[in-house]
Length: 294
Length: 179
Image (cartoon, rainbow over all chains, first blue to last red; front, side, top):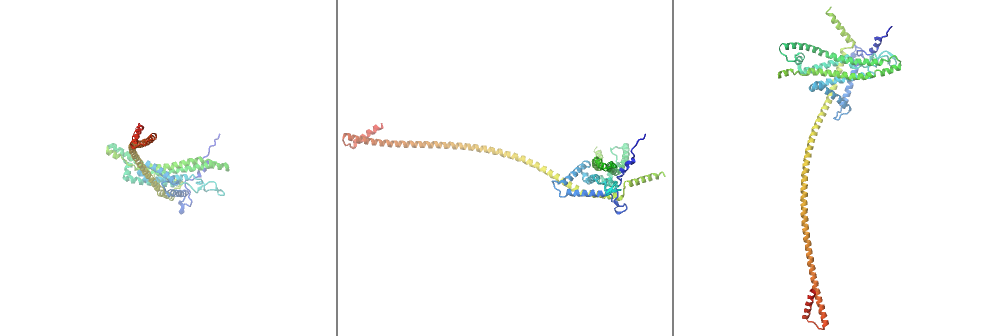
């Protein structure tokens, strides 16, 4: 008795359609070697953001026009969320970064869902303007490129560091991270100080790891989404022209809605985590003052 | 050997990771630069103007609310003032009506008295005129009657009556007529 188990190798071509890296549009060694398909989309996103920002804020009036109203809605919503987390004072400084993070990540994520992104490109020719699969796609969402997600995460980390040092100073940051809490004195105080020193080291490690977790979380979710949609699109391949055509439209459709949600969710998660990091490190430790009062 | 092996393994793993995900400084910096350009664009063209506009609108709404409150207070004061004015006007009107009523009554009484006096005067004058006319007629009647008696007497008696006779006949006749 033999059981026919599905062979993992049979799925690999589907998943292999989406590379884990962004494809270069020029030779790696050339001057434009940095220009990958994800950099190209990042430039397109930049142009979209610039165009819409100018359109929305040109000839602004107290009674807003449609584009102005839409951007006001987004900015006001984001600003209120940021104020709710980091407070009014830090929000004025941190909001430009946090707002940019949300908008840039969201537009990049959703850009990857546009038809043609990841499916138009270079591959093995099967006829006139026809390829078996886009092995080297022309367009790829920036958030599906680890270079971009690490870049965004490192930028956020640097701004976080700047805001933290600006707010509590270098010594304040050291005390905030390693300093003992609770106000215990004597031997217990020394024991607690050692414990908090150890906790501080763990805290430093967690701070250093933050850009890594932020970037890989975002990249992983968007890259996985790309893979899922491609896998679903190719699921009916080999069932004839009509079956393949209908399958490539119907099967990925539910996943498009899921990816819309994932794209929004990841933008929120990234922004929210950065906000929380800023809030945690810029909040003044008032225990000392409380102790003085007692 | 035991010290270098983990380093080599880690280095190999990092190289594999970098190679698998296409990490490169040039691509990394390209993405970072693009992100910061987006940041600057949004800060200059979106967040700044929009937050400014929201603040302006918030200020305008706050001013509007303050003005509305002031207007409501002014309206309440105006209503109170107008009620006081209305009350005063009503009191004045009642007083004026009462005074007019009294004046009209006084005027009516005076006119009535004048009318009565005038009527009495007219009646008295009419009586006097009637009395005078009656007396004149009576005198004329007596005179005519005396003349007629004298004439009849002279014709009956065939005697020419002298002045004394005529006078005596006239007196007798007048006495009889008066009776």
